[in-house]
Length: 223
Image (cartoon, rainbow, N blue to C red; front, side, top):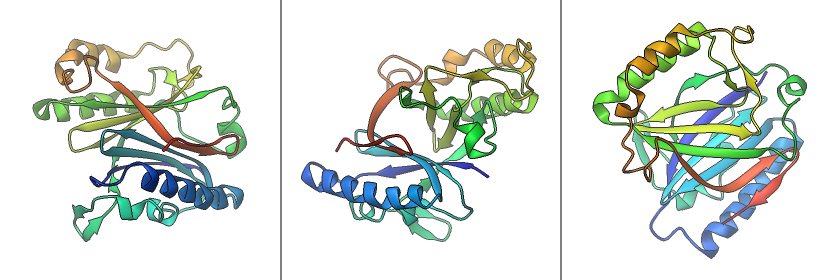
């Protein structure tokens, strides 16, 4: 069984240059052990300014980001949480077009030529719950089609979206061409009013830089 996870981190002020590159190279080796051991399927890490966004697919229950990112953790600020502080803040998964099954079927369309894209968006605080409720409604209905690998997660007022291009469009109900009433509701709710486009460079979502891409096909560090 495959589970998908998203986390947010914050790099310390002095966590750049050679220190970051060395930490990412060491992290790559740790991730490779998990992938070779068939415990992880993919780990993709993205950066915007000091913010880091981690997406990974696990093949085993109970695997957290601390298990394979030990080399990077000293470079991360600590987040306050209910049980103390953590270098990785959990992001709440709120949107997807598909549910992973067995690895062979899940990776069927995932070729080496696909681009793994990470994006972020900044919601106006007063629009946060509207965004989350409409996207939950779209998922619950299951008719809206989009990229098989796309998922969106939320932490504070920041969204992190992962997807792959070229896209493999599917929907949860499995009905090609199904019309989504929930999507019509979301469009009527004025989607543009939810996003602080100034913070995202003029767009709803801002594509951000990958600094570590690891799966069974690629092994890339860009510190």
